[in-house]
Image (cartoon, rainbow, N blue to C red; front, top):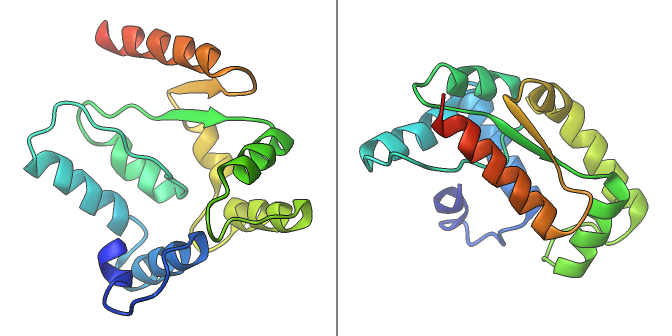
Length: 149
């Protein structure tokens, strides 16, 4: 998507990325981004890769059909995610609680996005409500379980 934004010299923000993604999904189908990223992984002959920001159930369904794909969700309490967003201070992120909640609602049920359904479809669910070390332990557990599958 960065390639799509570059020719227009449009700032790369959450809103611009979501707009471009929505346009691509509308023009080329709901799995276009998942298909493209999967093809890049296959073409690069990667045995391991991480794909983030999957927000559409059609993307989940496509990816789960691919050999060796595991869907891992990472969730945290909304207030904590908002605090972390404020601390990271990324351009384009909401800076008020009401704006954050508006984005949350939009991500749940619009333009091919439904994070709630995607989270439920995960093979593994991680909770990120505490220290990073706790999340790292959960990741190690998931990696160990995948390795023996």
